[in-house]
Image (cartoon, rainbow, N blue to C red; front, side, top):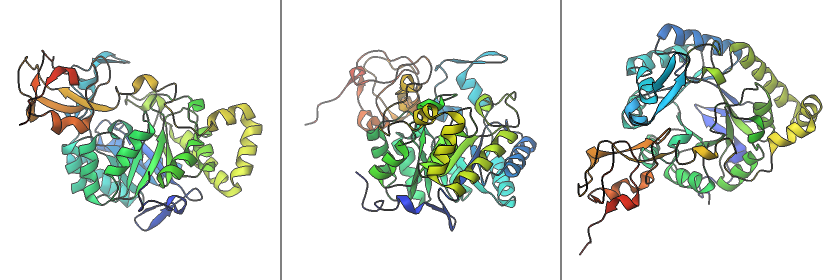
Amino acid sequence: MPSEKRTGIANKGFHVKDRLYSPSDPMIIAELGTSHGGDPEKARALADAAAEAGANCIKFQIVYAEEILHPNTGEVALPGGRIRLYDRFKELETGPEFYAEMKDYVEKLGLLFLCTPFGPRSAAELHALQPFLVKIASPELNYSELLQEISRWGLPALLSSGVSKLGDIEAALEELASVPVCLLHCVTAYPAPERDYNLRLLTTLSSIFGTPVGVSDHSLDPELVPVLALSRGAAVIEKHFCLSREDPGLDDPIALPPGDFGLMVKALGRAAHEGTEETIARYSRERGEDTVEAVLGDGIKRLAPSEKANYERTNRSIHALKDIAPGEILGETGIAVLRTEKILRPGLPPSWKQRILGARAAAFIPAGEGIRLEDLLFQKKN
């Protein structure tokens, strides 16, 4: 259930740095992610293009591979061939000086700087930059230690809710109860089918949890999901941004190039002006009533068809950092909270980490594999 602190704030929008973002004046995030490849010149070019296209917030990600996944997690197919996903993330690592420079540049453009951390190291580096808000990605929604750390900052937080169930969202919001949160509905698929978005869920989430809501959109269409999300009360719209879909960034194939991003911004402006009924009627005429109804959905929270297989694999769980021999006692240095991703098995949820420290391995646990309850022997307490 929503905390007493949150009740009644959903329709008042999302406050950041003395500005109120709402469906009539949304936060429009250009998610650059790691598409800059660590090159400050390209990052500035991306920020310039996003600003010109109408973004009012520019988002980055502070990536350290070891905070996200294990080297044995599997491979990903890229234009140059197959590569370990861990190695691809290693290529995306950039030091804190880069993000300090980008924050300064983005703010000189008059835009809001936003960044996502993925673990203790990246969180500490982001906090040192003194941002005005923070973004938590969908896979980290169940990463309780990270949420607790962010909660201590006292900053407004954007929380993506892809590949999650209501109970997962409730648990995350309890960890973040001391800070203002805007809950971003998301479908964790790349690309995500527009018909999977079930945008009436925005009203459901706002009503259940008492938070402002928005959408983090991975679909390819520049308008359909963002505009219909606005009609359902979205105060925040996030889309991946690139200079070209042919660029080599991990998310560039599903990102919007400047022209399409500009079309989205104009469509959002028109929808904010004309209102919900007229917007839905117009899109029903232009795109077809069946399509609009399919995108709006029934408002019931469930895993979308395109993300079902990712549940417990994209999310965080407890994994073995090294081979763990039978009878070995589990300690802090031998386990980590990671995404499972490709070929490994999921483990216990992050909230179990402190509980399993000191337990013995019941059998051999290979490096990288998720640690399950049946893998452990617990000592009896007197």
